[in-house]
Image (tube, rainbow, N blue to C red; front, side, top):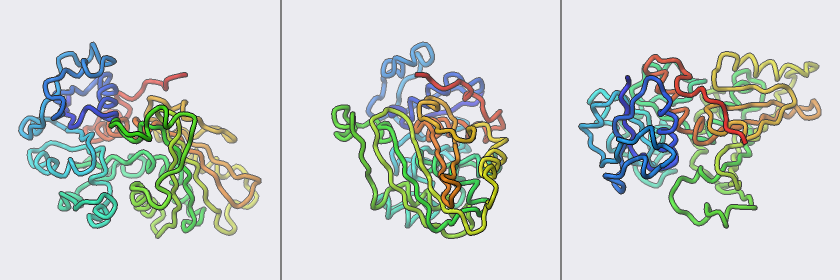
Length: 349
């Protein structure tokens, strides 16, 4: 069994890790940390986990104990993994960070967006960006994996086939994205209260959102050139889910007279990807169809057979957008079946 620890297990991504790992055939959760909940049993905080983690108790982080694990997940706010990740790596533990601490390769850019100096810039060069559909082989040998954010996952998977093939103008991309309230975390915040978020929808971060530099970095890597991106996120009155509507303008002369070419492109690119589902032509994927699972469902459209391509991309922000993708990375890092512990179907309704 692979022994793992979870640092910061009281938030939504932490409990989602626990839920998914409870059915993993090759993983044993040996430690989970929380300074504020030290001594509390996991099953007392989360009764949905009764019968799975009855003997697991929250403890304060201990580098020596965590360093004895095969892998440690960080399900923490930004800046926390900086202080401990290096010490764990030195002890031979592999680190899978669900926060934004190691996603950006430029420490100065990270500091600009997160309002503090990067606490472990020497680790950035060795960090692997954990989007398996782009970095699978590097993930297999990685010691430190930065799990992509939820919006970046949905956006990059949607644009990936188009940019790889050079079909769209990379200077004028538009990502119109919606998220459920769990994207804001479990901490009490007035905008996330039911009375505030229900029966309403609003945009936020239109001037600049912390996921913007991460998305730009990933799309630049795909396109092998500079990109221009307008990214506007929205808060919607649902618990889970990301819906990204992505726009791109076809380069001159592309796909003339072939209405089926885009569908074929997406189906071929993702034919061997276990967690990307290209839906039939004309589909409009719903967020509820990915609730609780590690799948990105995509549909590609060309309205009026014109020069604009529209990609619809949906994921569960807590699974493919966080904890499920973290486990997918773990599976690759330890030579397991990539879908181990991630095969359950979506929840309906």
